[in-house]
Length: 483
Image 1 (cartoon, helix red, strand yellow):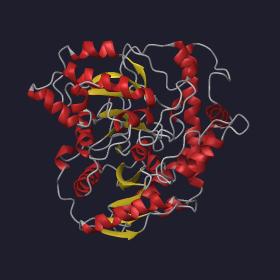
Image 2: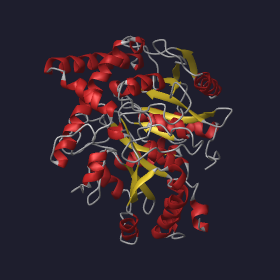
Image 3: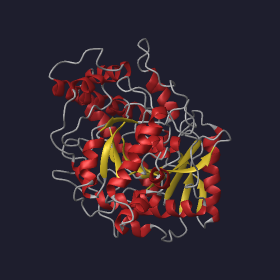
Image 4: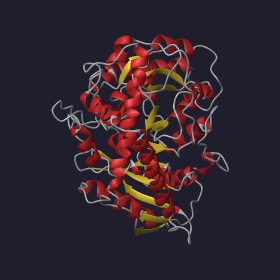
């Protein structure tokens, strides 16, 4: 790698933008350094599967918007994030073969560009983002830079691997059941799932569904700065989180006060949780107490309901059916069994047996779940009066590649295994609340383990305050993967 590629590799996006703003480095130099790293490092990881380096060089040498990340290289996840003039495959073989060019940006991608990012390509995603690993048939497996035999998580695993390995400092990510937080935990990064309706999903997706989009990053300040740059509704949005009282970057270093924090260190309805994951949560609880917070065992009782998984699965499967229908429309023909991975075919088939009444009942159950869960954060006497919930992000450290392999004979087996791996994240897609994964622990054999903090709906400010406090108390920027 070049000298600049080495010198800027571990700078966060804020520091890279400062180099550009000061005139010490030109955007094209930062981009060429990132391209140098991608071409050198990604041979081992397979994180950046679609590259438009020539286009990115044209962008870097043009007049860039004067946003907070002017000139900083950036990567888009290969899922839903349309970029005008470039392909988007959603991790699907049929879309990859069709090579369809997106005619327009999504609103969020336009905001990324307005923030000053130079977008250089796409990162790997499981097909339609359905699994907590990144091993699509279309592009092959992405490897975890902390140990190449292990998964980087999913569905934003390509983005997380690229950031963790130092190819770029920050990358796009999305989260419909944990897909920002899971790979953030597996790769030792910061991953914020925002409140439902905090950032528009327009013009093609609906804010009333389970998913949100933002990024994975190496620092809390990068995440806060990007949230300030891209937050807010788009045309036609009907789920809109109230704007913050002040910019999120103003929460960095702000005193959060003494918060009441509940600790959940075990599976909410009885499954196994790896000791290293429970240890991460307990150690973070002790650190939070040393910082003046009040931590006690406790979590929303509604999370104990085993019916939650069935209702969440019903909505997830319906979304899969809709996603496959959209692909068929795009390529102009019906999808065949060769076009779609077995686990996703099975989910779509399951959704086809739903009636409109079944779907309405699943939505109603989700509303009831959301209200029951959010009550835990509400002040007394209406609620339980907690400020934050602390959990492990995952039920296990990063798993081996192949753990969620497709199985034609048992097509839903990967989803059953996924439920064991991710007992803590999906509930807050259903409740719509913000949650952040922070890299607070490493196993004895060097694998990262994240913890999750969950705030009341709309309270990303509280999460950022406490996350920044933890980052100062127990820094992680010095930790570098072997790759």
